Image (cartoon, rainbow, N blue to C red; front, side, top):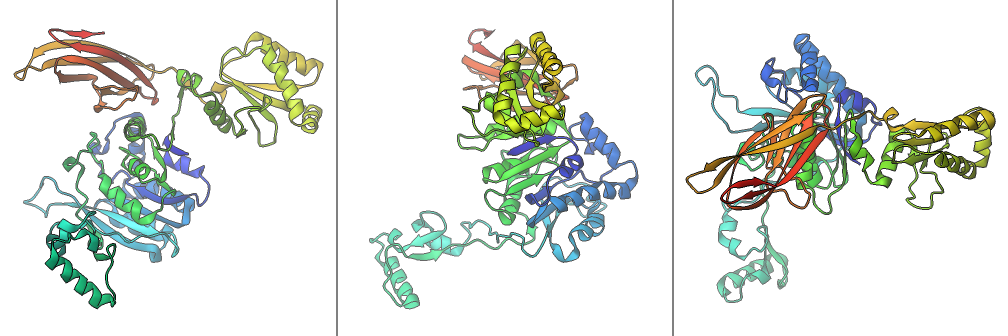
Length: 531
């Protein structure tokens, strides 16, 4: 399952199995010793920044080294790692971390990623215009696919014959019009001389190939030159990650980005039909990534899971029943039943094979307990009797809450029949919190010179844990939230509208990563009306 995980990547990677990832790209916070390194500004990011900077460069190297050590462990023998850094610590990272952990012999490239931008301090130094990406493979068996640049109109062959090419790469005999007799006969003669036979209509006369990609990448344009910008200062272009993923993985492989940031790696991996895992300590990072993925998801996209520190009761309570059963049993440490029907009251089992039943509701009653007792006995009579003899639970019922009748029946079974059934509230397995609330007010600011109505939107969000940011969709359709504005920390927006009817939606995200939502209809005519 594709996953976005909120948390410390070191702790999360320590829980991942050995050799389970095919490719790792990481763009860790640079060793800049400046507060501008704080991008999102939420608690998780600030805490990580302070930890890195408590002891200078060696503390930073130690902080990063223990994480790269885990990356090496979880990387498959056929896997590769690409570590993105700049001049502040690149030499330390190569010598003290990558050479030591991956081995000097497994160093493949120091890739230079050149980017355009403003020129600073040009009177004191040469302008800094590149980052470094260190490419290491885990073994000589690591996956690698040679990459070529796209062909362009500057290729002389393309200039001469491009008008005959249907796909921009190949020219077939059958694509040269019969009326162009001189060109057609010239190619027939050339092909006959080369191959010694008469060419056929589908024979490829020319195949255009781009230049081989070298270790200086100046063709992956910065984000501000593309329609990708989301307001994340260190956001990397999708073309950069596309090249890395295509060269070092195959479809179906697992891609890990332990510093997911604005989500470019996992979004590109998703488009390229790879499985993926993204981790970040910042609530804003994981929520922005979630919204980017939702925006690009299509009918055949693979599902993904967002793992937070706390979960919204309403979302869990209204989740698809079978999906909730599977998820909560896995969170409990059990093995879910793959059957959706005719499970005879058993939705899964513990590692010791004891039955688990899940009720996606509150106030579970006595009948549920009695029926589950019978289900446990049917499931494995020998184990049922053994658990009674050893005074262990014969099974577990998971629900949001339990009524007094169920609780009393549990006590009676224990005292009178020596049968132990354990009632497990969902909040004992995963922490639950209340999602934030948001209300929207609308102010008509009049008409501009183009006769467009200028409208101010003000979001008022509330959460016990505090508000992180807002996101807006000013063309909300078909219950699919496609953000027009992805990151709004103030909750205020001004938009311009022609006369007509619109549906507006706003999300608010709190410090736990939970979100509130409001949608409403807006009528713009002689006046502005929020319906």
